[in-house]
Image 1 (spheres, each protein chain N blue to C red):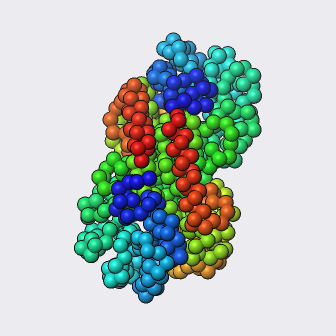
Image 2: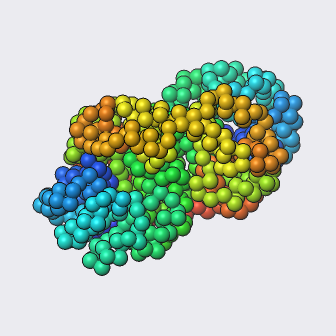
Image 3: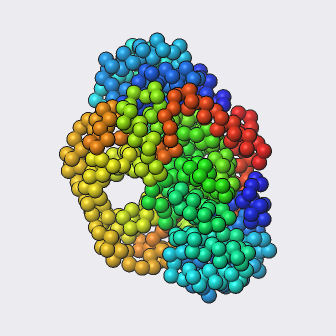
Length: 313
Length: 313
């Protein structure tokens, strides 16, 4: 599985754990990096001080490369950028914003920069901005999502044809067979979110993890198509929001109904009725609680099985 | 590319052309079968007499196996079933209905039966009904679509784990790399729609084909989530329908607004303003008019390139 992505990050496997709000703390990031992948911290749900604490703890827990995901729309993002530079974090993934904003400054400080995109237009922008790689994240992904609703299968195929820098596939990926499939499209790595979000090392609440593990096909859906498309587990408070949206509620009405802090309430505090539960469409394929080591073992075994099947076809 | 699907249908490549309304007539089906794939006629837009005519013309144009797709919700479906039996069609794909309805009767007449599904529940039903194979068709597909909005990448992975009969992947597939990727997930064939819908041998109107070829990413969208989710090219009359739906119009209001015959008006008569233009999300990857032979050449070359890359990884 040696690709330009493993070379870029100096890792053994081109498998990256998404830097997810309320899930991706130092325990998860360090566990993934210790397995030979690239663990990301999720700055989106951290104050700058908390982020620094998690960076330092990650460094204590692993001597392997790791990274931080910084959503650029976050009010703390400018401070987050300064903190990762000060703390000499080797890799930064930026998302939800303009890749031209901080890429050069990060690169001037020796940091590898990857930007997350959901369409070809932003992939080209990220390449022009000097990013080292791109995450092409499809419709299946949990949390914030593209307005085009382009699936990973279509998006990755389109973006590998459009850019020259390495492409990391994301959205809908959990098995080793899927990792093999994404690399065969021309992606050079994968970013996996949901499976790590419910892993034992994730900092998410047990109630959230269990709800994901219990969920079946069709149990996640893209909500807020009018505001900012977001994939959530159905049910609870968000069924009311979806009903309001379907009955023609305005953006303002929807925002007022939602209020703030819903993802913390759901994913970190475990309130399944009132909270927002961000998870990808592969939730239906997650059927038991696993450690990061078990997730890596499953991926390696599925990858080998797909490889073997395809060599003999 | 030998799989249980090539054995089942006695074909050279596990590549099936979707039996699409207004596109899949005898010229397209015969051309696909002559390339070593399985060409399907689309009974959904044919009267029983027209279907018989196309079956006979297909037999004159190829001595290879071919099939007919019969949407079971079509008012003519019972007659279509009798006609394919009388005409000794070797393969029938059924869709949009209960697989228990006709599978046994078709099999008793020596016909191979495949049912199209968009979720695991119906995949298991189709297997119980005695189907020889299943098409797992994801969210990316043009035309009628599942309510769960499960993408091909997730759906195929889930269904190959759930059933023992061969799985044919559909939705979002156009390149040979994608065919390789689907087989590596455990699918044993692919059904390709959009690329053949705009091929030179398709019976669709040139205006429709050109509109698809000109379209960019994000230009198809799932419409009628309230009624029966259907992927269409954006624009024209259907933008008004989508706006009505988003403002909270009822099912009855939407149906009255749409009226009847819209897919004929759009896809067969070429009225891009008033017609319904069913096409998959891969429309953005279709950039020039091609013959069926050219489509097969592209697939074989992309497949070989993916295989070569993955063997050396």
